[in-house]
Length: 311
Ligand SMILES: O=C(O)CCC(=O)C(=O)O
Image (cartoon, rainbow, N blue to C red; front, side):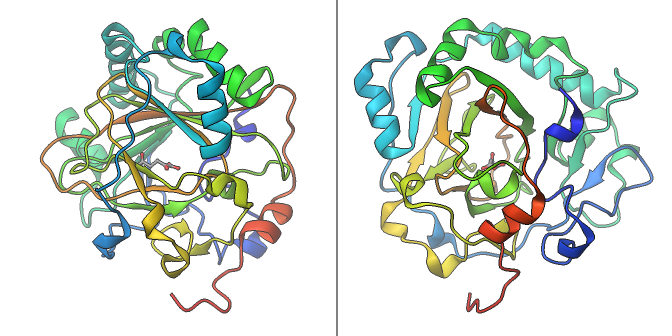
């Protein structure tokens, strides 16, 4: 897959839109990049903990009822989707990418921590400053047991009702104490894909994802309400004052748990202020043969650059 075909958040925008959605421009004197937004204060009531999704217990339990549930709600949680061997391979694969085993690998993005060049730190200290890794599939084979898992792919195929093709690969670290909030958003707002493309996000817990350390929160049914305008605030996000917080459902997962969700579903994660990592993998799939669309189309649908915004 060509690197250009897989966009990460806010990248690859024409100059015209660079002021609205910042490019990850402030590259360090190293191979990594720095989070353009940083850890900003937010209202903690944007995330409720009183509605918690349970989901089904394994990939082979999926029935037509669950497919219907996904279509209506825009998400499905599967508690024991991947084995401990698959999860441990994935963690080793990420460690390999971080340790410099693949000299051409340059997909690390760090949390914005002042005055520290993370590349100068020891392996363990460096890991604690990583926000995310992208584009690792071209370098590391250890993820194959997950992304080529026939049961997993068969569930993805059922849910998007098409042969799936991978569009993006990321690992989201939410490191201890400094892992920042990812405000409410729709993933399609980050991808230059034609309107109406069936995108499915597959979020896989590598550590226990809890209410305390920043598990996923979703708003059931919002995927059926169309694209909404995003603005550039604490991230490329939905306006805080446009959110119906009564619809928030939290999705805690154990390692190996999987959240499948529609590219238009409103979702977000609070910050991690605990002393534990909350690492995850995130893959996006689209129907095979889906082609990119111009960035202008995406901005016309999702972006407003903050005009008439009161939040
Ligand atoms: O894992 C997270 O904290 C947020 C993931 C997410 O929603 C995203 O990157 O689009």
